[in-house]
Length: 291
Image (cartoon, rainbow, N blue to C red; front, top):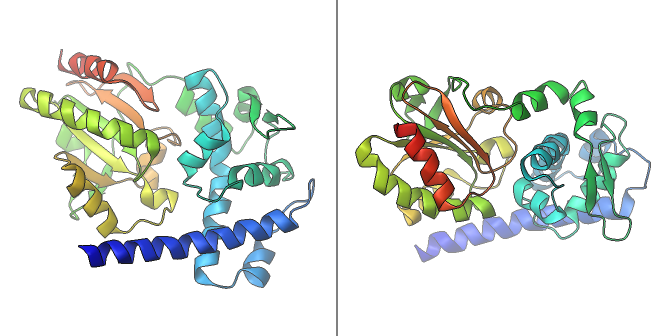
Protein backbone atom coordinates (compact mmCIF):
# COMPACT_ATOMS: atom_id res chain seq x y z
CA UNK A 1 0.00 0.00 0.00
CA UNK A 2 2.83 2.38 0.88
CA UNK A 3 4.49 1.56 -2.45
CA UNK A 4 1.27 2.49 -4.29
CA UNK A 5 0.96 5.77 -2.38
CA UNK A 6 4.54 6.71 -3.22
CA UNK A 7 4.01 5.92 -6.91
CA UNK A 8 0.82 8.01 -7.02
CA UNK A 9 2.56 10.91 -5.28
CA UNK A 10 5.47 10.72 -7.73
CA UNK A 11 3.12 10.71 -10.72
CA UNK A 12 1.16 13.66 -9.35
CA UNK A 13 4.39 15.59 -8.75
CA UNK A 14 5.51 15.00 -12.35
CA UNK A 15 2.15 16.21 -13.64
CA UNK A 16 2.29 19.31 -11.43
CA UNK A 17 5.85 20.08 -12.58
CA UNK A 18 4.76 19.99 -16.23
CA UNK A 19 1.72 22.15 -15.48
CA UNK A 20 3.88 24.67 -13.65
CA UNK A 21 6.29 24.90 -16.59
CA UNK A 22 3.47 25.49 -19.06
CA UNK A 23 1.76 28.10 -16.87
CA UNK A 24 4.97 29.97 -16.10
CA UNK A 25 5.88 30.12 -19.81
CA UNK A 26 2.45 31.45 -20.72
CA UNK A 27 2.54 33.97 -17.89
CA UNK A 28 5.88 35.31 -19.14
CA UNK A 29 4.95 35.40 -22.81
CA UNK A 30 1.23 36.15 -23.14
CA UNK A 31 0.61 39.78 -24.06
CA UNK A 32 -2.74 41.49 -23.38
CA UNK A 33 -4.82 41.69 -26.54
CA UNK A 34 -2.60 39.19 -28.37
CA UNK A 35 -4.20 35.79 -29.13
CA UNK A 36 -2.29 32.64 -28.17
CA UNK A 37 -1.50 30.32 -31.09
CA UNK A 38 -1.81 26.85 -29.57
CA UNK A 39 -0.40 25.02 -32.61
CA UNK A 40 2.85 27.00 -32.37
CA UNK A 41 3.18 26.23 -28.68
CA UNK A 42 2.52 22.55 -29.35
CA UNK A 43 5.03 22.29 -32.20
CA UNK A 44 7.77 24.67 -31.09
CA UNK A 45 7.70 25.13 -27.32
CA UNK A 46 6.19 22.19 -25.46
CA UNK A 47 7.68 18.99 -26.83
CA UNK A 48 7.43 16.67 -23.81
CA UNK A 49 4.32 14.45 -23.66
CA UNK A 50 3.44 15.66 -20.14
CA UNK A 51 3.65 19.30 -21.24
CA UNK A 52 1.51 18.65 -24.31
CA UNK A 53 -1.08 16.88 -22.17
CA UNK A 54 -1.26 19.97 -19.93
CA UNK A 55 -1.57 22.25 -22.96
CA UNK A 56 -4.41 20.13 -24.36
CA UNK A 57 -6.26 20.26 -21.05
CA UNK A 58 -5.83 24.03 -20.81
CA UNK A 59 -7.15 24.44 -24.34
CA UNK A 60 -10.19 22.28 -23.60
CA UNK A 61 -10.84 24.16 -20.34
CA UNK A 62 -10.72 27.39 -22.31
CA UNK A 63 -14.02 26.47 -24.00
CA UNK A 64 -15.67 25.07 -20.86
CA UNK A 65 -15.24 28.21 -18.80
CA UNK A 66 -18.03 30.35 -20.35
CA UNK A 67 -20.60 27.59 -19.75
CA UNK A 68 -19.40 27.09 -16.19
CA UNK A 69 -19.50 30.84 -15.45
CA UNK A 70 -23.03 31.17 -16.83
CA UNK A 71 -24.33 28.08 -15.04
CA UNK A 72 -22.80 29.29 -11.77
CA UNK A 73 -24.32 32.74 -12.21
CA UNK A 74 -27.78 31.29 -12.79
CA UNK A 75 -27.49 28.73 -9.98
CA UNK A 76 -25.93 31.00 -7.33
CA UNK A 77 -26.97 34.51 -8.47
CA UNK A 78 -23.34 35.60 -8.40
CA UNK A 79 -20.22 35.11 -10.53
CA UNK A 80 -17.84 32.27 -9.64
CA UNK A 81 -14.66 33.19 -7.80
CA UNK A 82 -11.27 32.37 -9.27
CA UNK A 83 -10.88 29.71 -6.56
CA UNK A 84 -14.18 28.07 -7.53
CA UNK A 85 -13.17 27.99 -11.19
CA UNK A 86 -9.83 26.44 -10.23
CA UNK A 87 -11.60 23.75 -8.20
CA UNK A 88 -13.96 22.90 -11.04
CA UNK A 89 -11.25 22.75 -13.71
CA UNK A 90 -8.68 20.98 -11.55
CA UNK A 91 -6.08 23.75 -11.74
CA UNK A 92 -3.26 23.44 -9.21
CA UNK A 93 -0.85 26.25 -10.11
CA UNK A 94 -1.38 29.64 -8.37
CA UNK A 95 -2.61 32.30 -10.78
CA UNK A 96 -3.61 29.75 -13.42
CA UNK A 97 -7.27 30.81 -13.64
CA UNK A 98 -6.43 34.52 -13.94
CA UNK A 99 -3.98 33.66 -16.72
CA UNK A 100 -6.61 31.63 -18.58
CA UNK A 101 -9.07 34.51 -18.33
CA UNK A 102 -6.46 36.90 -19.72
CA UNK A 103 -5.88 34.57 -22.68
CA UNK A 104 -9.63 34.24 -23.16
CA UNK A 105 -10.16 37.99 -23.21
CA UNK A 106 -7.67 38.27 -26.09
CA UNK A 107 -9.24 35.52 -28.21
CA UNK A 108 -11.72 36.62 -30.93
CA UNK A 109 -13.53 33.25 -30.75
CA UNK A 110 -14.78 33.95 -27.23
CA UNK A 111 -17.82 36.04 -26.34
CA UNK A 112 -17.23 39.18 -24.27
CA UNK A 113 -19.20 37.78 -21.40
CA UNK A 114 -17.50 38.94 -18.22
CA UNK A 115 -16.08 41.91 -16.40
CA UNK A 116 -13.22 41.65 -13.90
CA UNK A 117 -11.97 43.74 -11.04
CA UNK A 118 -8.76 45.42 -12.18
CA UNK A 119 -6.98 45.04 -8.84
CA UNK A 120 -7.95 41.49 -7.82
CA UNK A 121 -8.71 39.92 -11.20
CA UNK A 122 -11.93 38.47 -9.76
CA UNK A 123 -15.01 38.30 -11.97
CA UNK A 124 -17.55 40.95 -10.99
CA UNK A 125 -20.13 40.36 -13.73
CA UNK A 126 -21.17 37.51 -16.00
CA UNK A 127 -23.29 38.40 -19.02
CA UNK A 128 -25.36 35.24 -19.45
CA UNK A 129 -27.27 36.73 -22.40
CA UNK A 130 -24.00 37.27 -24.30
CA UNK A 131 -23.12 33.60 -23.86
CA UNK A 132 -26.63 32.52 -24.88
CA UNK A 133 -26.36 34.62 -28.03
CA UNK A 134 -22.99 33.15 -29.03
CA UNK A 135 -23.21 30.48 -31.78
CA UNK A 136 -20.65 28.23 -30.08
CA UNK A 137 -22.12 28.23 -26.59
CA UNK A 138 -25.74 29.34 -26.85
CA UNK A 139 -27.51 26.04 -27.50
CA UNK A 140 -25.56 24.10 -24.89
CA UNK A 141 -26.18 26.75 -22.26
CA UNK A 142 -29.87 27.11 -23.10
CA UNK A 143 -30.40 23.39 -22.58
CA UNK A 144 -28.63 23.57 -19.25
CA UNK A 145 -30.37 26.56 -17.65
CA UNK A 146 -33.91 26.36 -19.01
CA UNK A 147 -34.90 24.01 -16.22
CA UNK A 148 -34.93 20.23 -15.91
CA UNK A 149 -37.62 19.57 -13.35
CA UNK A 150 -40.78 17.88 -14.65
CA UNK A 151 -38.92 16.73 -17.78
CA UNK A 152 -38.12 13.10 -18.68
CA UNK A 153 -34.64 12.02 -17.63
CA UNK A 154 -32.39 11.59 -20.69
CA UNK A 155 -31.39 8.10 -21.74
CA UNK A 156 -27.76 7.16 -21.29
CA UNK A 157 -25.30 4.28 -21.57
CA UNK A 158 -22.01 4.32 -19.66
CA UNK A 159 -19.22 1.95 -18.66
CA UNK A 160 -19.00 0.97 -15.01
CA UNK A 161 -15.71 0.91 -13.08
CA UNK A 162 -15.62 -2.88 -13.51
CA UNK A 163 -16.23 -2.72 -17.26
CA UNK A 164 -19.96 -3.46 -17.36
CA UNK A 165 -22.36 -1.51 -19.54
CA UNK A 166 -24.85 0.46 -17.45
CA UNK A 167 -27.85 2.08 -19.11
CA UNK A 168 -30.83 4.13 -18.06
CA UNK A 169 -33.03 1.19 -19.06
CA UNK A 170 -31.87 -0.68 -15.95
CA UNK A 171 -33.34 2.16 -13.84
CA UNK A 172 -36.82 2.04 -15.38
CA UNK A 173 -39.46 2.16 -12.66
CA UNK A 174 -36.91 2.87 -9.94
CA UNK A 175 -36.49 6.12 -7.99
CA UNK A 176 -32.88 7.18 -8.45
CA UNK A 177 -30.22 9.86 -8.53
CA UNK A 178 -27.86 10.54 -11.43
CA UNK A 179 -24.87 12.21 -9.79
CA UNK A 180 -22.13 13.98 -11.82
CA UNK A 181 -18.82 14.40 -9.99
CA UNK A 182 -15.05 14.03 -10.31
CA UNK A 183 -12.27 12.72 -8.07
CA UNK A 184 -11.01 15.19 -5.46
CA UNK A 185 -13.63 17.83 -6.44
CA UNK A 186 -13.88 19.90 -3.21
CA UNK A 187 -17.71 20.27 -3.17
CA UNK A 188 -18.01 16.60 -4.20
CA UNK A 189 -15.87 15.63 -1.20
CA UNK A 190 -18.49 17.27 1.02
CA UNK A 191 -21.36 15.69 -0.91
CA UNK A 192 -20.11 12.09 -0.98
CA UNK A 193 -20.42 11.38 2.79
CA UNK A 194 -23.97 12.73 2.72
CA UNK A 195 -24.91 10.51 -0.22
CA UNK A 196 -23.42 7.49 1.55
CA UNK A 197 -25.58 8.15 4.61
CA UNK A 198 -28.70 8.76 2.56
CA UNK A 199 -28.13 5.74 0.35
CA UNK A 200 -27.81 3.57 3.46
CA UNK A 201 -31.11 4.92 4.77
CA UNK A 202 -33.14 4.84 1.55
CA UNK A 203 -31.72 1.95 -0.50
CA UNK A 204 -33.98 -0.48 1.42
CA UNK A 205 -36.93 1.49 0.01
CA UNK A 206 -35.68 1.06 -3.56
CA UNK A 207 -33.70 4.26 -4.04
CA UNK A 208 -30.63 3.89 -6.28
CA UNK A 209 -27.66 6.07 -7.20
CA UNK A 210 -25.62 6.14 -10.41
CA UNK A 211 -22.50 8.24 -9.90
CA UNK A 212 -20.95 9.41 -13.19
CA UNK A 213 -17.27 10.21 -12.67
CA UNK A 214 -16.04 12.98 -15.00
CA UNK A 215 -12.26 12.45 -14.66
CA UNK A 216 -11.90 11.21 -18.22
CA UNK A 217 -13.94 13.91 -19.96
CA UNK A 218 -12.16 16.56 -17.87
CA UNK A 219 -8.80 14.93 -18.71
CA UNK A 220 -7.77 14.86 -15.06
CA UNK A 221 -4.59 12.97 -14.11
CA UNK A 222 -6.27 10.14 -12.20
CA UNK A 223 -5.86 6.50 -13.19
CA UNK A 224 -8.42 3.71 -12.91
CA UNK A 225 -6.47 2.46 -9.90
CA UNK A 226 -6.74 5.89 -8.26
CA UNK A 227 -10.50 5.85 -8.76
CA UNK A 228 -10.88 2.31 -7.43
CA UNK A 229 -8.80 3.17 -4.36
CA UNK A 230 -10.86 6.31 -3.76
CA UNK A 231 -14.19 4.47 -3.94
CA UNK A 232 -12.85 1.64 -1.74
CA UNK A 233 -11.62 4.13 0.86
CA UNK A 234 -15.07 5.74 1.07
CA UNK A 235 -16.84 2.40 0.86
CA UNK A 236 -19.13 3.54 -1.94
CA UNK A 237 -21.86 0.91 -2.39
CA UNK A 238 -23.73 2.37 -5.34
CA UNK A 239 -23.08 2.16 -9.08
CA UNK A 240 -20.00 4.00 -10.34
CA UNK A 241 -19.65 4.75 -14.06
CA UNK A 242 -17.32 6.75 -16.27
CA UNK A 243 -18.99 9.83 -17.69
CA UNK A 244 -18.72 9.95 -21.49
CA UNK A 245 -19.28 12.88 -23.87
CA UNK A 246 -22.67 11.55 -25.05
CA UNK A 247 -24.03 11.26 -21.50
CA UNK A 248 -22.60 14.66 -20.57
CA UNK A 249 -24.24 16.25 -23.60
CA UNK A 250 -27.57 14.49 -22.98
CA UNK A 251 -27.74 16.11 -19.55
CA UNK A 252 -27.13 19.61 -20.88
CA UNK A 253 -23.33 19.65 -21.20
CA UNK A 254 -22.83 19.47 -17.43
CA UNK A 255 -19.88 21.67 -16.45
CA UNK A 256 -20.41 22.29 -12.73
CA UNK A 257 -19.64 19.53 -10.28
CA UNK A 258 -21.43 18.12 -8.48
CA UNK A 259 -24.65 18.24 -10.47
CA UNK A 260 -27.53 16.05 -9.31
CA UNK A 261 -30.69 14.84 -11.08
CA UNK A 262 -33.31 13.15 -8.88
CA UNK A 263 -35.64 10.95 -10.93
CA UNK A 264 -38.92 9.39 -9.82
CA UNK A 265 -40.41 5.99 -10.71
CA UNK A 266 -42.00 7.42 -13.86
CA UNK A 267 -38.61 8.58 -15.17
CA UNK A 268 -39.33 12.25 -14.51
CA UNK A 269 -36.73 14.60 -13.06
CA UNK A 270 -38.25 15.96 -9.86
CA UNK A 271 -35.25 17.88 -8.53
CA UNK A 272 -32.12 19.29 -10.18
CA UNK A 273 -29.29 20.71 -8.09
CA UNK A 274 -25.99 22.31 -9.05
CA UNK A 275 -23.07 22.41 -6.61
CA UNK A 276 -23.06 21.34 -2.94
CA UNK A 277 -26.37 20.91 -1.12
CA UNK A 278 -26.98 20.30 2.56
CA UNK A 279 -28.29 16.92 3.74
CA UNK A 280 -31.90 18.05 4.44
CA UNK A 281 -32.20 19.33 0.85
CA UNK A 282 -30.91 16.05 -0.58
CA UNK A 283 -33.11 13.98 1.71
CA UNK A 284 -36.22 15.94 0.73
CA UNK A 285 -35.40 15.29 -2.94
CA UNK A 286 -35.04 11.54 -2.29
CA UNK A 287 -38.39 11.44 -0.50
CA UNK A 288 -39.97 13.17 -3.48
CA UNK A 289 -38.63 10.47 -5.83
CA UNK A 290 -40.19 7.83 -3.59
CA UNK A 291 -43.68 9.33 -3.56
